[in-house]
Length: 88
Image (cartoon, rainbow, N blue to C red; front, side, top):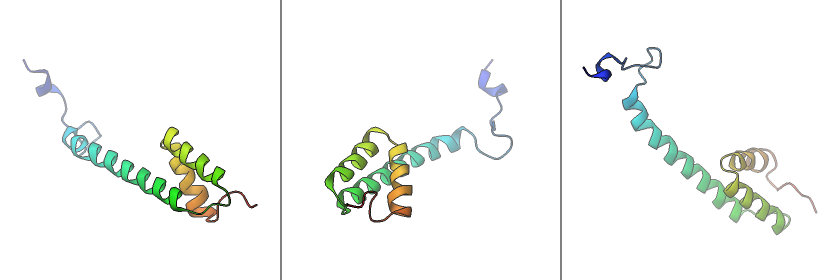
């Protein structure tokens, strides 16, 4: 007897998201996340901050605190404060 024959193919409550969708969407979401992360790293490295310490802190935060650092950079720098945090 095969266990998988008795296993429901649709475990997401009837929305059509089964194992096949996860196999396709999982890697796509991962690749999109890496592209998003690289885009923010490149933006941070090219952006002119008031001082280089702020730039270094953002780059380190995005590398070591992925994805929280990248989302914080997106909100704080890209969306709210386009000139950087510190005003010298």
